[in-house]
Amino acid sequence: MLGFRMPTCIHIIPGCITRLPEVLRACQISKPLLVLDKGLEATEWPEKVGEMLSEADFTPVVFDQVEPNPRTTTVSRATEVIWEKGLDGVLGLGGGSVLDAAKAAAMMATNEGRPEHYEGRDRFLNPPLPFVAVPTTCGTGSEVTWVSVLTHEPTRAKISIKGEAMFPNRAVVDADLLRTLPAPLVAATGMDALTHALEATTGTQANPASDALAEKAIALILRYLPRAVADVAGDSQAREAVMRASTLAGVAFGNADVAGVHCLSESLGGLYDVPHGATNAVLRAPVMRYHGEHVTARLGSLELLAPDGNREAPPEERAEQFLTRIETMVRELGIPRWKDLGISPSDHRQIAELSVRNGSNGSNPRPMAMHDYLAILDSM
Image (cartoon, rainbow, N blue to C red):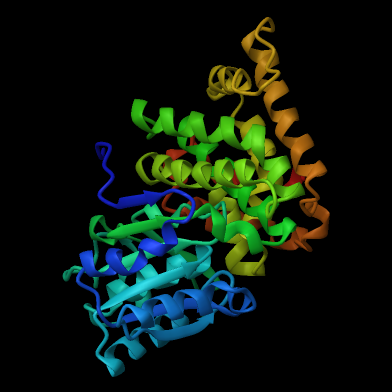
């Protein structure tokens, strides 16, 4: 069992994107690979960051080919750019897909082979290139974790590459970057952060430090996510709260792991390429209900974090109230329903098989075998 650790230096205040040049210098990066995706290129941030770095005498090389649910082949292409251009670090600017791909590219730049060769924990020999993470969504948490989740196309399976040396050197968490995020993405990524915190605090690897972070993240999301979805550009208080919650939840699950919701969601992402935040949102309550008495007391205590949490009800009733509360939030925020995701019942067995093989399956509060995942899928 790992003790609590947080090796990433975190800058977390609105406007801290202006510190990026000094952050890169502190990491001894002068020629970074700037990893983006096409969606972010439609915003002001790539140009602003590029100008900021150029004025500070940095020479970034842009790699903008990251797709949702990033592929191992995409990471290999990014790695080749690092080698060809003689780059000395990686800067990820984007959501979870970008940060996971950038994190893996930093590792692959100093290690031979293909990303899938390093599935598992601490399989690589050489330390990665310095990596700075700048999240642009309020859900990833990847800016403070030691894992990169990628899709291996030949098997249509998600793989997790983990390593103590894969924690980003620094994270620049600036809530102002959320101003250009569309409302549906604020909702989906905020729901992802809620799942991170919830699974971190109900799983078998939870510890007092990760619990404290998870509780704070849950309280912030319950209170501020609806406001952020309604007006992320104009409501600075809500914007800062959900961004902070995302990073706190990331630190929590980076130390305590996720569990069955993510096992299913990552399996679905590999097979169907569906949005990770949406699948987490719709699967969260069914999985927690399946865990039953294994999480009742914890869920009951989490209900008290809500602004109007019922302190008089018994734990079992409070637990159900909490799950009903987050289901209501999912509906009100317009998250796609299970039936809208296009998941064929004929694939349930394969999804269940992949979920059992997921590295986080052992962190479930209730042990989960294939028939358990099948029961959840068949009930949806």
